[in-house]
Length: 128
Image (cartoon, rainbow, N blue to C red; front, top):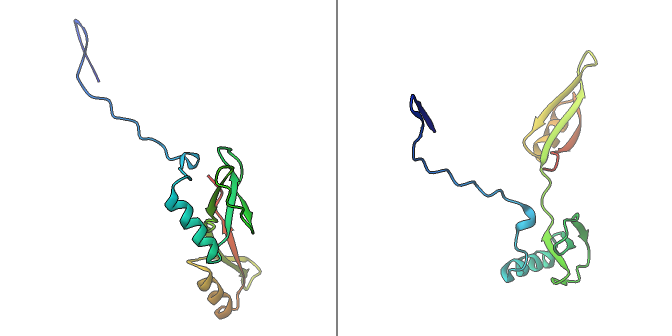
């Protein structure tokens, strides 16, 4: 903050706010023992596992039979897709109808209970 006076600018002593560190998925530490055990237990219980090369900014790929080579690969439980369930159909005059449902069960109920809605669709949100 500057205060201008006839004699020139005088600075007020104000501490700058520290910058917040942005969260980056590539900064996550996949080497922790508890994390590794959790991923392996999830695989044992039937959840889908993804892997990618260590330290490489590459795409996560789903693997059916992970080799658990933690020196060469990062592993994670496949995240649930983020998006919205929608129901669609045609109105009386042929216009398109659409509505957003809270979850898949509600979308299925709408299609079952309301004759105008004929389809349920999952619309994913774009990746950041």
